[in-house]
Image (cartoon, rainbow, N blue to C red; front, side, top):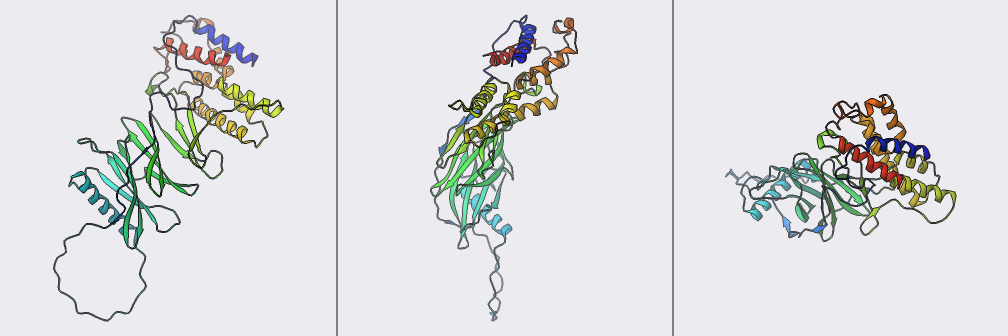
Amino acid sequence: MRQTYSIIFVLLGLVTACTPQTMPDDIRPTQIISGNETAVSATHTPIFPTTAATAPPTAISATAVPTETAVSPTATAPPDPAVLAETLKQIMAATLQTETGNDAPFAGFEGLTAVPLPLAQEPPLWLVHSVGFRPFEPLQNHFVAVFAYENENFREIGRAALENPDILFDNSVQSWEIDGRLWLEVNSGVGAHGNCLDVLRLDQTGLFDDIAYCHSTMAGSLTDLNQDGLPEIVLNNTNDYVFCYACAVQLPDYAVLTWNGTGWQPVSLVKLGGSTDMILQNNEAVALAEAGLWQEAGELVNGIESQDPAISWNRILINLWGEAHQTLIAQGVYPFLQLVFYGDYAHALVLMRVHSVDELFADAASNPMLVGTPAEGMPDLLAEWIVAAADNALR
């Protein structure tokens, strides 16, 4: 730690000549949704009638009535999934046309996708959702609906309108079975390059949008972080605008939620009470992570041999952040600042040592740490980020 602090003071010395403007937001990890992202609280969507739905009638040309012929009884073939999918799309299209008064083929949407859900239950469940760009004149939100197929008819169980997405694709919806419940993970596009995540919950009363979250890049996902067979929700809160979006220098940050049997519960770094070596090591690892010293935090927490749930979650979270930092360093866009964000000041200093003192203290137009990098033309902002990271590490 003493060597790390010495290196930090060296970096601080290089940026004190810069006149800082607005200090960047606190760079410590957060466990809440913040920043430029759009977070939408869970809302219950009214469920449409659950009466049996049938395909709209089709005109039939008159034909001669054939003479009845005795036919031996044969086994009924299972319904063709492709035929059922087309039938469900026709039903949904007709329903939308009636509800919206729009007689376009898909009531304003570019198309519909219908697929069976891979759940071993009776009656079997089917998914149908809109695809393509949503209509804007008038505005019509994308939707996801679940139907049950029984007695050769489709019955709507629930439908959720998605307020955020501009575009859905055929493969935008994935299904999960968690704690005996059906969950739908919806990844969609919004704006020029944004992404949205909706997590839908199906129960006996309908389909509900529990999580609605958007971000400038990948919004998040369902993934089994602790390998217990149940996925967690990982929301991406990464700062994609350290210099500018196209500059591709990022400061990783996430929010993690786990299912506790009744709802989604945030998971955060936790210090423990007690004085055993294991507890002291855990608490030091958490302190290092909170200081932005992710490399040291990872080395320490991964050396703790414990199955304690709190320590295990600390290990998972520290590795989640640490691996994200390592990926950005390896991409090589601007490794100097990415190393500072990772807390690896020793290697950040290595990148500086190839230059002379005169070069390092040269003006912005000729400084090798700036020219040809994403920080070119933004020396004050670079200085602010270095000061913010160093200040956090020295608290």
